[in-house]
Image (cartoon, rainbow, N blue to C red; front, side):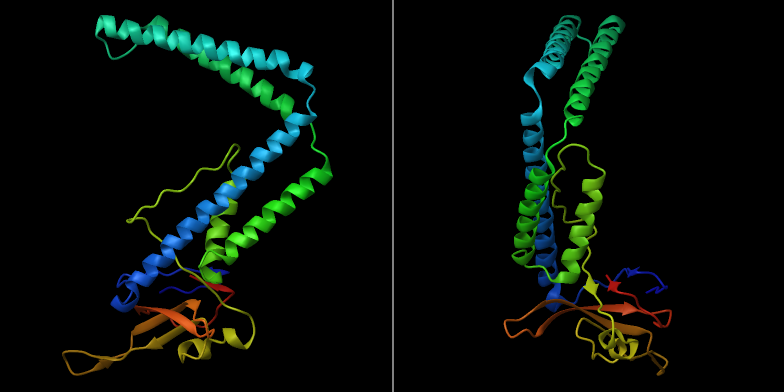
Length: 265
């Protein structure tokens, strides 16, 4: 495990979780995945509703011609693609001839240009600030409700929310849902609070209520003992009595843990 003076720390655990909490970890990853897609659903609905609000502000006469240009471009492209498909069947070729390919590329370019013009015309219309604030408030309330019912402890759901924020910022249209993949690298996280609870001594002696890293002495074949192995325990939930639920991992340490910031994962 490598620890540097960064805001977030990340460690790989080659030994994997102990058998007694392997299924629990998998359940947490599943819930993280479901929570991510729930946030995607909320953001998609927010963007779709915002688009409808903007469309209501646009005079129909100002975009009629642009809409018609898009429709005609789509029809022309579809006709060219159908004709090219028929020619491939007749000639038993897998690719289009040069003339057909050029015509299809030109049609696609014109369609893109028509859609870009329509999109720009819509973006030029402003939605009233009061409607935007109301929409964002409703979306935030849905996010808060989804967070409360996701079944993921706060250190791990923050990772999901950060991933969503990064994806939403780079997505122009509607964000995509994530697929579940068993072989994908999954992550759980712990939020370490400032103050006494973040003291290194508490973490190394098992007194911290969110993360524990306790040395596990082992005896070598030579008879000597070594203390380079640890049992890392991360809090992944709470019982009904607000007692911690731990996920434990075996790990090797090669550098002293001397400083922590706010998050470990």
